Amino acid sequence: APPPVLAPPPIPPWEQAAPPGGAATAPAPAAPEGAISNEDLVALLKQREAARASRDWYMSDQLRTTLESRGVTVIDARRGSGMTVGSWTTTDGRSGVTTGPDYFASPPAGMAAQGGGMAPPPYGGPPAGGPPAGGPPASGGG
Image 1 (tube, one colour):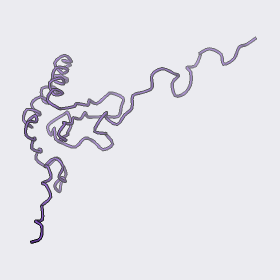
Image 2: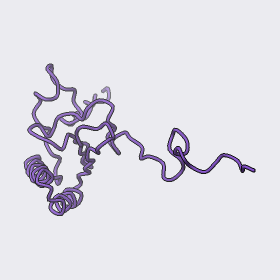
Image 3: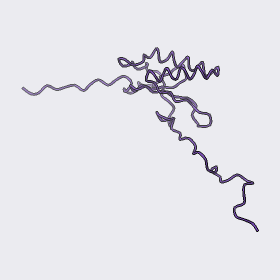
């Protein structure tokens, strides 16, 4: 008898292509066994968003620590970086944005999954245009 034909393993919901109309209309992917549930994830993201809006940085940091302990990495938008919205990723592959109402929306194009796609400015050294005006003379005068 010929060997049995094995079917490929099912594709996890968070890796499937978005339905017509975009990811915003797709339901949130199911959380894998043992991972933070989508309901808990959204609840913590909402609490953290509210804490940041009220400038309660201590609570925001506590909620970030809670999320990280549950396998969620949060990358905040930074002023002056060009990022307008933060993102999050889980160790099981789910991702989204840090502001509602759709926390499972895809991060904006050009924003890397880790680090926000922006390198920090170099530490030290003159600014890109050279030393500031009025600085020391280029060579000794005499």
